[in-house]
Image (tube, rainbow, N blue to C red; front, side):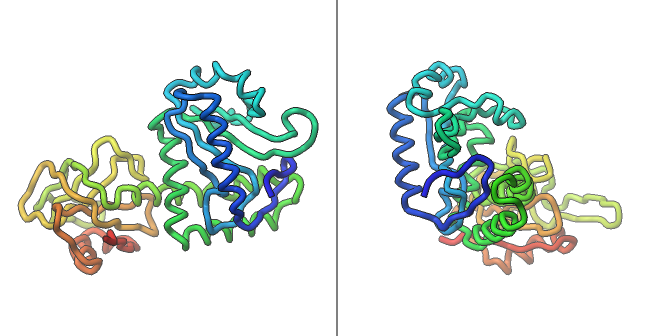
Length: 294
């Protein structure tokens, strides 16, 4: 089954047909747009292999300039992709095209949404990270499915779409935060150290003395709106910069940010060793350690 009456909220078990239709849609768009497309992927709930979803196919398209794709508006419309300039007025820096006989006036079905974003933008990264994180984290996918089922049961079947979307917002934002830090697990990056070993940080109710180097990835924003923080293990002298591998994540349940854990290439630590190393600060939070599995 593909397509729903506009405004309808109905969840279906995952179907192989969705994957096939997504690939067919990608092929059709590539044929029309050619090199305008810099990347194109199946995203959204129908791309999560273990989860119930509304049977509407979401495709993300990355382009260098929005004008590049708008130049093909007629060709896209002729192929059944209708530009919806007002449909995502609240979403900056995206264009939306949609498919289904609702848009040509012959019926009431919506079947596809094509989300056009800029190459390398945070919107593109979020689409991909959200999909990949849920596909590799069954517990998160199940939690999202449970929420969607609960919301679908609370709203009118034929007019509850807006309430359904709003009900998912907090979960999506939380999951994007988790997906963002998770995307760095296993990567080699360079960090700047702003709190080296021995640094003393006077907090409101206590004083922190840093037994390890602590820094951030320049230009990469974390959940608190500041640059993403990193604990550096395995380096016993103060340093100002370091290139190493992200081997773990400190997930904070009672805070708006998570922390990465770095070590020199070839060096590993157990979850218990990481917990001991970061306890000087994490003792004040409800934290859980995730380690790289190789």
